[in-house]
Amino acid sequence: MISVKKVVKVDTMQYRKWPTGNRGMPNPFLKKLASRVPLSGGDTSFLQDACGNVRHFPAKYDLIREGDEPGAVFVFLEGWGCRYKILPEGERQILAFLMPGDFCDMHTSVLNEMDHNIATVTASHVAMIPRQKMEELIHLSPAITRAFWLMQLVDLGIARSWIASMGRRGKRRAGRPPDVRTLLSGECFLLG
Image (spheres, rainbow, N blue to C red):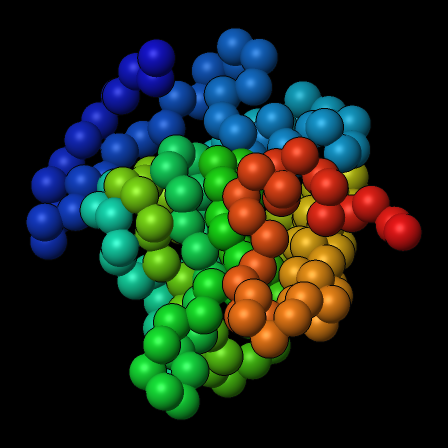
């Protein structure tokens, strides 16, 4: 169970400090990064500090919308989120699911506006890391930079798998991405 150090009510959203003690991996983001690249104690401290301010969002809440200016990088610590677009017919098309440990769109800082929406699917705790802090982390440590790029490459691999899967289906199922069990099992990455 996660112990909350501080909760402050602001604009109907709750902010809290995420535990930063060095008891193993204090959050799923650090765990995911460390599973890809060995992180030093200093790297872990910098990342813990970056994820320190966490905001609670209800289910089905848009964190950022298409057309908005890119802001903070969102890191899902608890709960699920998604990237989606609204199609010309008004229907929502999910582009990706976001699970604890995932972060969103590190690279959008080069864009003038978002080309998709990011929302919570379930009630979620999301760390919001300012762009300037992300740039500091990238310049601070080659290990952190490598871990960030590897996470982005995994996201792109999943997106390519979804596109390939949709292209191979009949018209009836063409708009449906692989189900969550398939994504979690890694079957969407199997060749052949």
